[in-house]
Image (tube, rainbow, N blue to C red; front, top):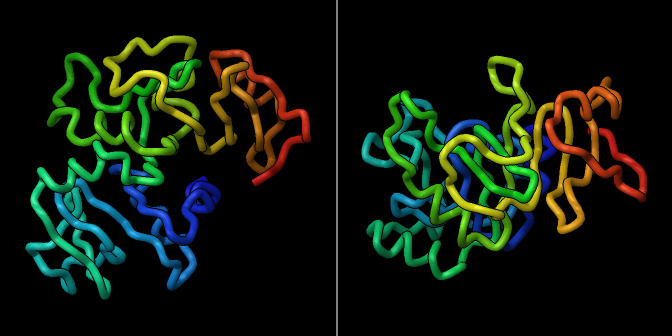
Length: 210
């Protein structure tokens, strides 16, 4: 699913990757692909993650991962970084999710009663990036659907999600409803429908397989 989602990243884009599965997308990008990776703690044009023994201990992304630099990498304060986000300068953000509502609502920062460090930059990214993509498992650890009619968890942002990539499917959020575009190898449409808590429209052009 991560490899499939990596195809969202295209040459010339400025992209922000959320914590968790999204950060692994860089592992599947074509070498030398001309993209600008943005981190809301103040980096633009960052390079791939580095192991601890090779890393500059002062250079981390917003998720605390050690990252490298590339020719042209720039550094700035958080105010400038969020001005870039709020100004709509990001072509794409790929975020994790706890729940996705049928209308594209996103909940990805808090489960009431459990510790959370705060919403962080997710709220700004989900509202202001030109395209918002979610990458997550289709079910939570209790086997419950993450794609639901209405989010019961605190929202990160409302009606913001354009597309969802899971380990089972690729689903677009449209004005007509959620449209199933692709399914994972070895699964059937019925498998995906059974694991999704909202009705799914089937792509009229035929389903792809990833």
